[in-house]
Length: 385
Ligand code: MG
View 1 (cartoon, helix red, strand yellow):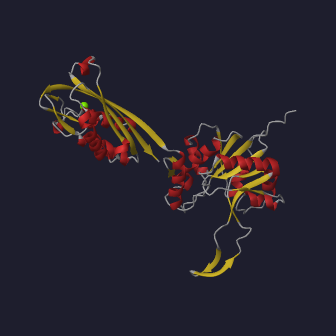
View 2: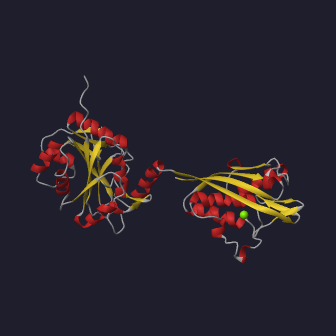
């Protein structure tokens, strides 16, 4: 015999507050955090939990026009909140779907909540009818007045409450209906109605954004979960012309001809520079340094590479790896390979083991095989934490 599928859960995200203790001129749930708004991160945390079948967002009445801007692929029901937190939750409970036997109520200012914690609260609520996460207090507790410690308090048995707080739908609807208002959270409302609430181990990462410095902590926590790794490729060709040396990956090599180009024609460095622009999604070397512009005539290609490296840094990316291949029959690259690697590492601010410069012939085939020019390919990896 198979047991019936567990009932799905509804998530109520309370985002109607006007708190600006966190700084800024707009309420904290609408402020930007690691590239998205706080509320969008919170919604994303719940979207990833398979047991959630309905999401209700309580907005301040003045914020209702923002409902359409919520960054979520999950269908959202947005309701206007009331004067108090209790009134806001009651407005949301009215639209919870009949099929959802469990309701989770979560504070929008806790965007770092994990899918694991949400799932644990749902499981505990299925068992006990009411469950909420909390962390045991580990710091010593003092009383204080006028800037001085006036006493100690026993911390055993004390917990720091978190959300989401989970309840059977009927239990919490009835408890709110008879509540006279003024509760800090929904656990207080449930307990006032005589219901026991079980404690689920909370998470330190599930912080509540309250003060300005909390944004930096939350961004770090969310950033770890959204590391941005990019790969860019670059390709370049320069033809041979009259001359007595070529410049490849920053190293001048005596030769019976020179590479032609508007700058110093360092085909290797150009490919690497283009690979960085490619990873950034920001054009190519010709767009940043137009060949028609006389100021780049004969320019050292280091200028181009330096620009791309600084552009990556300014956007928060670290270059973690570069691999460049030169394609030519002559000059022979082998004797200069180590110097090229050192030069490129120096220009890019990398360690030697993060840099590769290698060469191949094309078996005398094609334009490189006939010695008409040199081609170069490059790959770079950029990481933003
Ligand atoms: Mg070029």
